[in-house]
Length: 302
Image 1 (cartoon, rainbow, N blue to C red):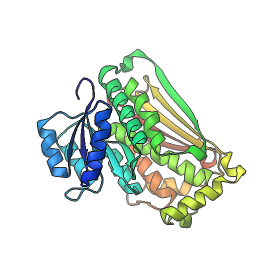
Image 2 (cartoon, one colour; image 1 turned 180 degrees about the vertical axis):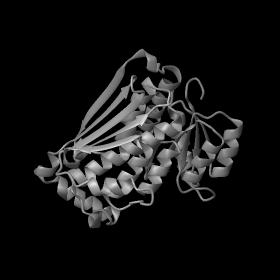
Image 3 (tube, rainbow, N blue to C red; image 1 turned 90 degrees about the vertical axis):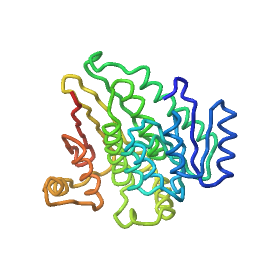
């Protein structure tokens, strides 16, 4: 990383988009290089130290996930913002695991992009220059109450990254796995607890699902519900604990938990998919309050 975090590489197979983004970023004092090829981007990264890569997910010679994977294989630490149209959940989870810093939707909103770059910049500088020793405190915690009307996957990164980067020097793998857990917990609380979506509704096309969500949120009985999200870092236990609780009706989680703890069972259906992921990425998984509250604990490396 450069001292000022101002060198950016933009990767997109559309020359017009490259030209527009290059002009925009240069106007905001960033040093910008561009390429239409993912493999050419990798060659550039071998030669120069870039702070950030902005990459279209659908470049022809290598897709965004494979590009991210190449970066991690080389053990490079550049932040990566992915540009995408509609991002499927599995793609999103894998991208987070591989270290994607943020996602920008098409058509690109210049203000949103600049805001995202600034957020990534601040997180990186904070982690690089101002990491606080775990020995400096006994416990640190942060909690949020989330309005379902304003719920967004992007808020997870915005909440967790600055907090964890401030207090801990986590590996990228550990941070990504914690982000995946938080995403699963909050998404389950939103879709199942707050909106009470059925399995059939979850399987609908994105446009149809979005319409149903809007309709549900128009009902005061649903829009008045809230999600409570908390993160606690405990020095004595050397652990991170994350808790999500919603105002929904809960669910019978007993059978699902029994299935995910069986070595021969892999439940990827509805609740089971999220529970399976949480079980395998945490050291402890506990449900309470009739299924409305879930808590995971992850031990930290000594």
